[in-house]
Length: 200
Image 1 (cartoon, one colour):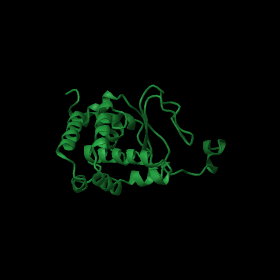
Image 2 (tube, helix red, strand yellow; image 1 turned 45 degrees about the vertical axis):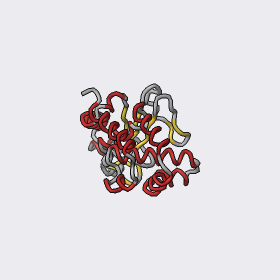
Image 3 (cartoon, one colour; image 1 turned 60 degrees about the vertical axis):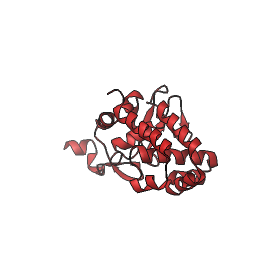
Image 4 (cartoon, one colour; image 1 turned 90 degrees about the vertical axis):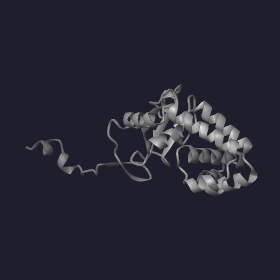
């Protein structure tokens, strides 16, 4: 009797070399994916290493979810059990599309200096600038749609603007259209410099 028949392998359907990790089918990353992503992100943005993130691949909505130290996550999207509670964790849902820039952008949520710049930006933004940020940020409307409230939606929109400027997630013409003041640009450029040159 053939080995396949002995173990009933002939009746097992052949699976495609993909797993569902987010929306649609996502290629299964290599076993070294997490370390490779961290290495590439840290090489380009040394401040990533300062935040000591742990990266894992999982299933969820969007591209990734960042869990700051101590955050357990939402009931429908809990922190992965293998992710120590005292460490920043990033669960990536679309590894084939998630870049080192995206990894750096995720660290902007937890980095202390980045949070200071974000807080300054929120306090200094004019109503006209905020209207443009709301219009450009998918995060704002999505937050409203999820029922998170205006304050949280504005926070998420400011986060999107920060990522848009700091790691180029928004095109240059969009960043320019917001009309950042010289002082705001000074703060944003200092953040970019910090991200790229921390510890060098």
